[in-house]
Length: 106
Image (cartoon, one colour):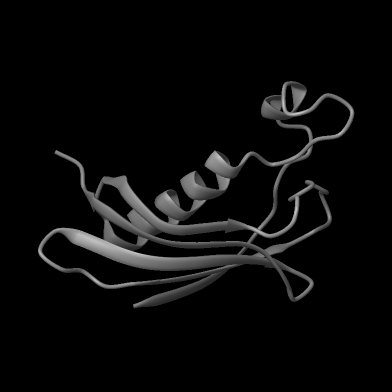
């Protein structure tokens, strides 16, 4: 299955007070969390990020209210496991790539 979505990152979010004051950067863990939440919405299941086969942070993701981030997500279900790939792009340029495994949370 596949999903293509556009998201906006709020540059005023409290997380940027610590990451980093005056020069906000979206933490890598937040990008993984976005993938997880989108996958949960699509599958209707609570999931855990079990294994990252490959995570590439290709550029800093600096939040700007007007910027739309394109998220591409592909997955399949295999016995309660969800192998997936995802990428984030801004203006056609790759920012983040993930290949990993999510499992159903019990």
